[in-house]
Length: 53
Image (cartoon, rainbow, N blue to C red; front, side):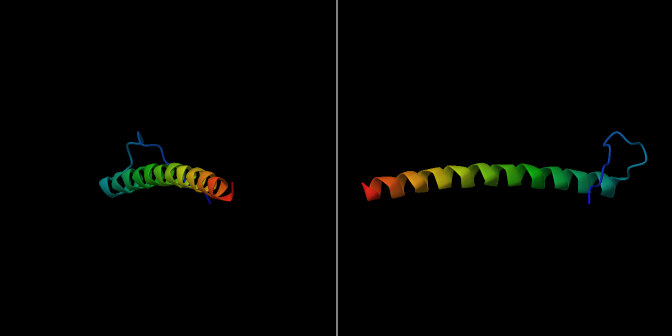
C-alpha cells in the first residue's frame, strides 16, 4: 500500500507535515543502515576469504 502526499498541498496540517518529516527521516536512516550493512558484508566476506587462504 502506498500513500502519496505532496508537501506543497495547502490542506496539510501541522501533524501531517510532522509525520511526513518523520517518514523522510526514517527513509534516510534506512538508507544509511543499508549502506553500513553492505560495507559490513563486504568486509566480512574479505575477512573470511583471507582466513581461508
